[in-house]
Image (cartoon, rainbow, N blue to C red; front, side, top):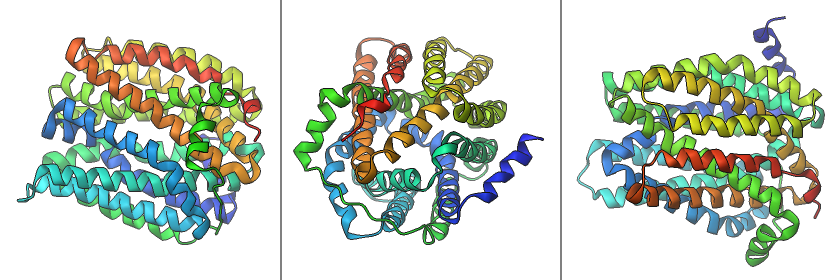
Length: 395
């Protein structure tokens, strides 16, 4: 049976999970228009230091505000927060649009607007989404469900980098951002039909920080901080690095990234099956070691061919450990019972604490050493994925 036929099994998902999937897939498609080119746009507008500083501010504010915003969950169904977060995501694209249009508005003010909408998008969206996914997914098929999601996203993602580059070159940046706004708004339609759930965040502000730093949960929180560290490099530093190597050629950037996505689609399904049948810790251990080498290889690239070959290798090993790592994370979350929102909040804090440290290091490296050392350090940090432990999280 071909893997395209196997993907059709997603139609048998329960309605509550199918609605959540449909919403997230459309939303991710909208963000896919910006994933590679958003950092590049800011890089051309305010330079490398300014771009990294923007993301440092966002991650720092998000880290500090998570325990406060989580207290709001008791007042409304979580799908309301998903809708508010998605609306703020559209506002985030709108801020990009205003920057691209060169209106007679202070760039500083527009960057503040971008920071605010990005921050609110994260605060309203990610914890409710992770809580709902942990609640809705079948515990025996988490790896497969995660695999299905990323296969569909990857299939769409094959054309997104090329489409984004074409929009920029054929029209302009503004057209790309308008397209993103429309897709993001469309994703709100299935979100209205997501099953109603509520959570009560029971930790106080200082208690949340204390739990984050506790010895009992230290290793797993460190693994999630490592995840935030390396994903920050992948989302915000790597696109700019590729853009510089390819001499600012948008179509070449889009084409290379599309080929990399195409070459790794099948692997997502295969690792989803492995995750449900094999020991997750073994897959994470093997994949994280190879993944750390991928960051080192990325520090050595100097051409489009290098980017393509190293990109395929890195995505391959990322699939090898990412699916079991995510499946284990949702397994831990689901096992928390009524503490699932507390676990999700602490995980988000850990992720962004790792990003904060990475951005600070990157700013220092710009001033004193070559930025490629960010990738080397990212390789070392990636080894900390192995510290994730299901046994640590019993409240």
